[in-house]
Image (cartoon, rainbow, N blue to C red; front, side, top):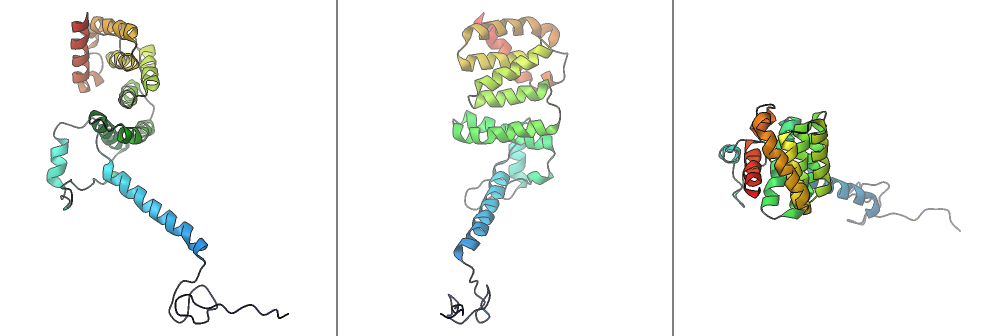
Length: 226
């Protein structure tokens, strides 16, 4: 029996080849199983970058943020949507802001699958900013409630109130978490605490001004329910 290896020929031009690339036509003759992981990996990476860049949008933004972006970004010829912002240039808090608003938008539109996709990204963005304070816990809790994670929402509210029993955002979040969970007894208790605490607590913390509408709405509903 001969020990000579069988001659390998180029799969494109049929000429003999001694290595991976054909010296005649330049074709890549590596087995498909060697090339597939690179192709799949590269395609997945490109898709991920495009997806994250295309859908990141803002939290705690001013009311005119969306129209401002539309006026400064080129429109897509296919959909008329503004081009995706460059999130690589944003601060960690700006990224958290945009992801927060993205979750809220999808939740309000009833697109819970999309909201739930972005919720973990938004929560992680908050956790990357630094130590998670009461303000960040409120935002994380609101995100959790928006996607139906009542356990996380109520846990964040409990943590806020453990540190400051009269914290208005903690009480607002506790009311929302209890309502989503269908716990009307707990919701009524937190409404009563909110109305009682608001007059003296309202000017205590700067985050109250940023979420004034949330607090005002919760107080109005709590007062009407009494």
